[in-house]
Length: 268
Image (cartoon, rainbow, N blue to C red; front, top):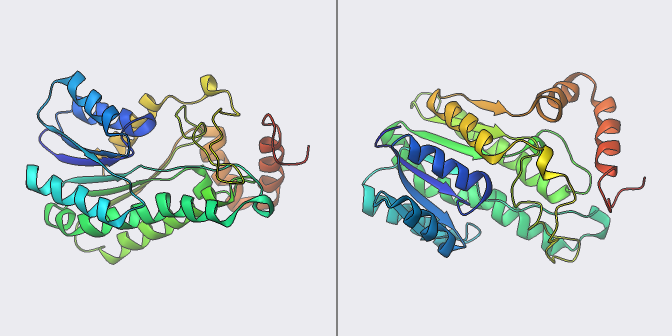
């Protein structure tokens, strides 16, 4: 990855920040996008590097995504990897959820991926580079109480799989990365039924895969040009296996698992 130009969205915290640190340690040049520009600049200043470009980016804004790509090209002249990582979650039953919450989650998670990919794709085709999307196990399994989140992650997977097939003969690499539950800020910033911020995570973050480990495995998948990676065994790979061969059993197990969360919107 030495000298490669890598764009990472949602890079101010969690998996995005861990990815930035992982690729920086491998010698990459970084263009980091996030709404919290102060945190991006603090990260850059800590590493004392002129090869880190920080760009305030709200990926739900098409013009912000276009600006992210254009400024990256202006500084570095090329793009080798785009990692669509920015995302938000939500927690409430669909019947109780304001439709604006659905729109907000889809605008960030799905359309943010679409916008950044649209403007970066010509440069990725030139470099025969990598296009990656960070989805979730929720992109394979419908998580109750996370309707918009699951829908957005399923949509990203379908979008990226289609881009891969459209460019089957162009040497474009497309990766769909699906972490299981990972320690990050995504649950703290999740939206509730009325669109307010949840504020506290309902899960034990200490028992989850670390963002650092997750970032390392995703970086390895990009280096090796894998088409997909599913992280964690029980919540990840085994759940996807059950979904293929024992879907009704997985439905029951998923419901029971999610119902055990503190203050779960599901019936106990």
